[in-house]
Amino acid sequence: QVQLVESGGDLVKPGGSLRLACAASGFTFREYYMSWIRQAPGKGLEWVAFISSSGSTMSYADSVKGRFTISRDNAKTSLHLQMNSLRAEDTAVYYCARPKIDYALLDAFDIWGRGTVVTVSS
Amino acid sequence: DIQMTQSPSSLSSSVGDRVTITCRASQDISKSIAWYQQKAGQAPKLLLYATSRLESGVPSRFSGSGSGTDYTLTITRLQPEDFATYYCHQYYSSPQTFGQGTKLEI
Image (cartoon, rainbow over all chains, first blue to last red; front, side):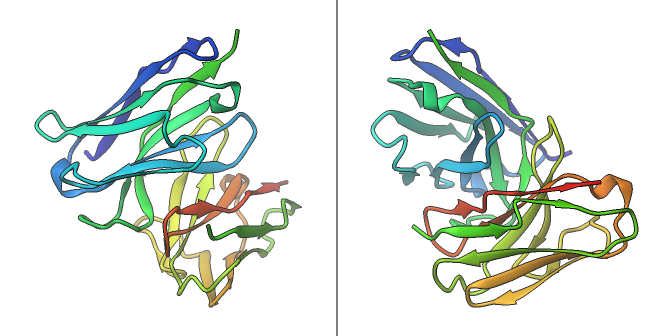
């Protein structure tokens, strides 16, 4: 079945780095833009970054620009988020999500992973 | 960035009731809005997209409407499993943005 599974979340100190992964299965991964979306404890949803189906185009929320890097490996059907210079306010559950329509830059997200927890604290 | 103002932030209702949640966008989003349901400890689940299109498998008691800047999610005949938090999401322009959420409680 169509599935996204995140991993890599951990407790990290402020200023530290972390690399999240999202393993995709059950669909043609290379045909979909992919996004990372996060949710701070007790808060709402915040889109973090997207990457185009080919991996040639990326976009980031202002809150993470210059610190986070999204990437993908279509051969391995995996999505990544490299997180550097982490701050306490980056503490959240990080979800990878797929839009409904292939090759769609902007669309509703119909497939979500279960999330991975990132905690930034000294 | 387009701001999505969702109201109310919380709502108490009973099984069998009809409830309406609203989202107001800071500019016209041309019906490019989705609604999600999220239960504690779970990922969001897509309910509706393109304002009023029901996602496959979602009960017909969920419906959506609106245009321009104002949109609503309506749940008729509330069921016990509907008590959750609901989010709107505009995908008209990047960065995509979400409403603050509405917690629907018994």
